[in-house]
Amino acid sequence: MKLYLLVGIAALGLLSGCSSTPQAKLQASIGTYNAATTGRAYILVLRPQQQPNSFSVSVSGPGGYSETLTLQSASARTPSGVWWEIGWDASKTLTSGTYTFSATIDGQTEQVSLSVDASATLAKPTVTIGSNPTTKNVSASWTASPGAPAYLVRLVNRTTSTVVARNIIAALSTSFSNLNLNTSDSYVVEVYPASSNISTDPPIVPGQFNMALGESAPFTVNPAP
Image (cartoon, rainbow, N blue to C red; front, side):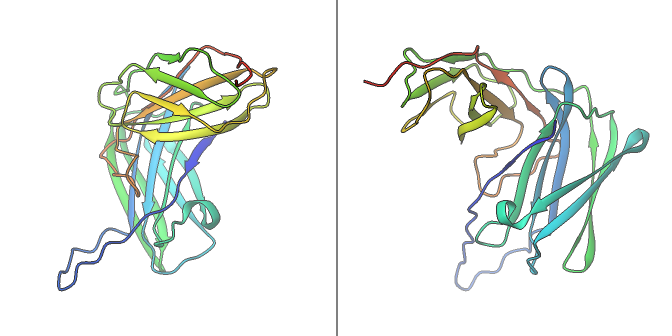
């Protein structure tokens, strides 16, 4: 099953009288996703001048590897016009070698190629739920994953298979508050370490982008006081 995260608001800073080197219209990276199996993770940042409803980014690699990633304007485009997305898929396996991203942006073909070491993975963190999770508040902490400057953390309702809340942080703990959880449902906290600082907006695109998954034991919640 393909999973992805779309996040918003990038800000543009302008300094009067200063010029800066134009940033690439396409930045992209791919790497391993260490979960129950070792799949693939990717990160995309697009900086178009024209703003269509969607972008398609093709990926090719060793052994005939091929897939197309589609970004939708409603979720991937930020107010500044920068588009970005990270994603992971445990069913797609990478082999070491060169991978190439290609997209048509503002009428021109933009390409990015990078070398991937398929043996390089991030460690899965061990996730612990704080004492007395309630229908309104849940806290969690986890062990560090060396090489991961930031973590995507999701509170997931296992009964309904829905994501209830999420944070992207550099710390090793977080709290979710103002929730409306159900005492009859089962929940887990998923922690995804990433080899890039995905807490910035847009995120930093590394030479190889790896992710992993650590998750808590399923738990239920108590009624809030």
